[in-house]
Length: 101
Image 1 (cartoon, rainbow, N blue to C red):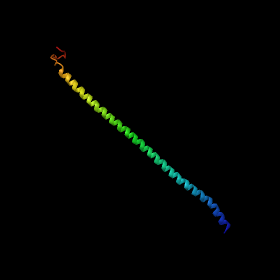
Image 2: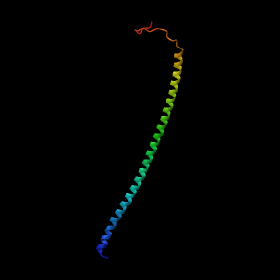
Image 3: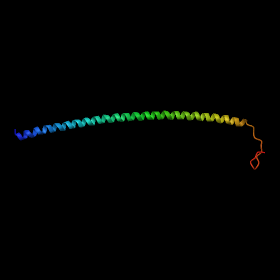
Image 4: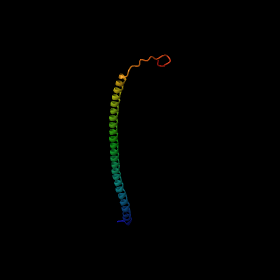
């Protein structure tokens, strides 16, 4: 075998080893970055789900409070209408100058 060919082959082996090493580490980096991305998306989805659950609960509580307020206002209206109905009718006459005679 020619010594120049042997020298060239021996010089290319370390370079090839470095390329293989870099390719392996690049693929490992891609794999770990995909896992990190999956973890991030999973956490983000869980956080958004929690926010949606809290907002839904708050909306339900607001609706319940609004229903209670409507009920209270309806009861107050009935009471006020009853009190107004029991009040004596004013028999005073109002003149043009808005004074009660």
